[in-house]
Length: 314
Image 1: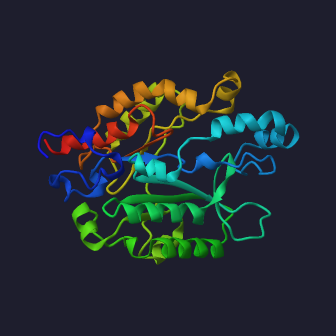
Image 2: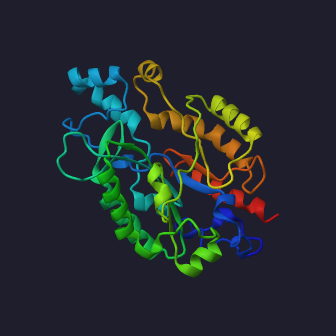
Image 3: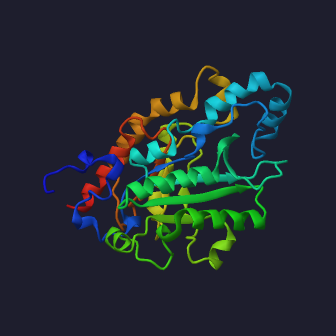
């Protein structure tokens, strides 16, 4: 293993190929690639699918009265990932940002993901795909962050929890566990579920919400400046995410009518990833942990993050 660069690890199984010097490092001290709004590759392009209620009133009104004009804009800016969840995992993603909703006026208990509009795939379908992928990759560990719940009753939360347990069964890691690869491999735990809801305190298999550093900026320089400021105040103790995802506002969208989110991301990745290369994982005050982005297959995003773990071997 010595002399091998971590940039050469096979992406679909990079965790199981890490050098043994890192097997006892807690996962929250490793650099881990993450997918922001992971399930936006299957947004419902049918105009009958409503815009999600978190969108600005202005957009909801425009969508109601000028749907054919507005919808193409919504999709161009709402899609943050183009690859399916299994493809993202194959590409090395190990943290998934999952935003869960119950569709308004839906009499079924089906849950979906959402970002601007709802997905066509249900939560259960996607979780089963993740479960199948984990069966085929027994030494890889994924962190699933369930958050931004929309329209879920207490009953729907309990149904979701039952689905999570039924799909992942003995792979679910309880929050008392030591989070090193060596320990998780020994017991067969592969899934860490964080859940942004007060029910986590009652359930031993739900980890608390993972803080997400998000800068709400549409310029790379401003994003980097914000993160440098946050680093001075020190990293949280456990898992945390640095989201290098840019945020466009209505003004930006209207002044760039021919662009899409992907255009914005691609134009800024060189600068953002050169900043990422300077970062260090670990336990220090200024260390980073999970780094999440949009269009994760682009610009060596994943390889850049995995390679940061070489700094822990020095």
